[in-house]
Image (cartoon, rainbow, N blue to C red; front, side):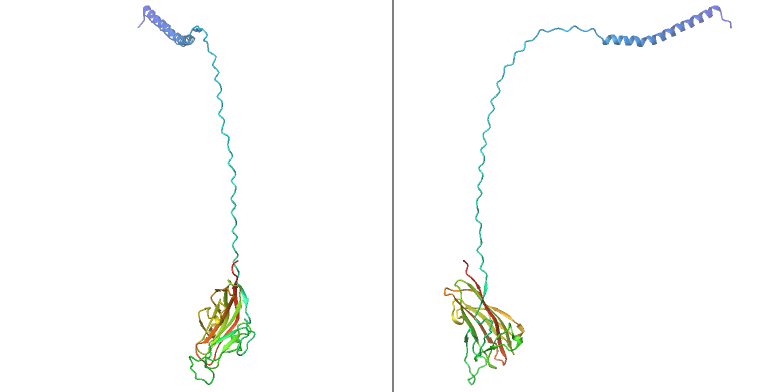
Length: 278
């Protein structure tokens, strides 16, 4: 179909109108951001308002406040130095040391048949050969001699006490010694025994008054010994020497039975002395 000139004219005009509209849109897009920035700049810079000048205000001079007088601290009084209390040192009284005192013929080096030098004898003798005899109540004269059997020796020479066969003996040997009054004393002696049957009764005593044969003395408990005991140490009780300053030491022996062979053996008699406290 062939278009007329009028139609061509309308199409051209519409094309021109489209170009003009399109150009306007492009121009608007370019100019819009610039206009917006100018508006914002104008809004951010307001016209400064003139500052109002105020009349000067009178400030009064501050009144000087006097500085308070400091309160003085109390003077510190020094604490007096304490004088240490002197406590006297207690010096204990030394304890007296017990000492052994040698007795006369305490080692029995001297022995005679009927006596022992340095020692007194107190024996019960109620029978002599040829007189009526009772094996339990008859006592013969004691016999003193050095021990002759080495098995009975104690320390060297040893005192042996015996009697006639099938008789008994009953004897006390004693010695009185001068010791300072107030001293504590104890007597001791070594002993052995032999008997075919039974044994030998032995004991020791001490008398603080110095009486003969320890008649008022203190005795140890009796000991029944025989050859199976070996050497036995006999000790008396400990006593205090009286005002007289004398003490008597004693040892005693008696067979249990009147057998043929029986004997008591003694050696190393000594007195243990503790001096009185000062």
